[in-house]
Image (cartoon, rainbow, N blue to C red; front, top):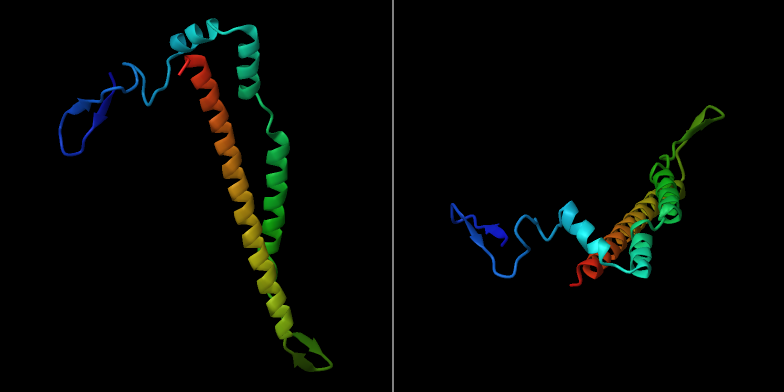
Length: 138
């Protein structure tokens, strides 16, 4: 029986229907995993192994490229005035607007890349959960 600590009590209280003894948050030890894997058919084992070893290299490379683009946009230089013919000419207000728009687009692209990376992590963890549920028969 698993235990949950209650901050208002000094001792831990057992929780009905919780993970088996020795398991933390439903995690299995190595022997339990080996026993479950031994009971799988070859097709099921192949399916679970493909889920575990799925290659996400293409997705990661795409997100890295998006993040590099976003970083370049976020580092858009601030326009500066120019000295011409002995006179100083301030930067055009539209140049400032373009720099601000570039930084904003960079932030948007960075946020989008981070959300995609988070979604990919969720997909990976969901695949692992489905695999473990299938192995354990739950």
